[in-house]
Image (cartoon, rainbow, N blue to C red):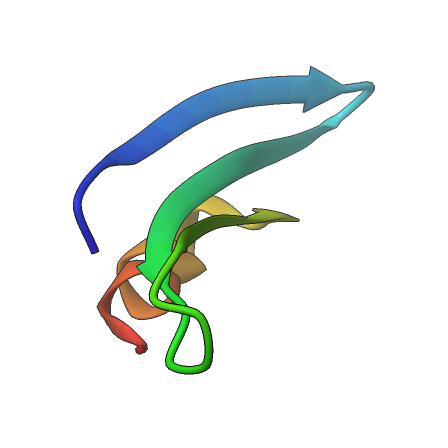
Length: 50
């Protein structure tokens, strides 16, 4: 995981966060970006998973 980016999004009354991480593919060796929109409390868990 080389870079991570976090952006805050607000939709109505809910606060959401878009987290993007760069993961190295085990098959090709190329880097891919995995992104997810989630509650801000789950961001650290998402970024720490491989």
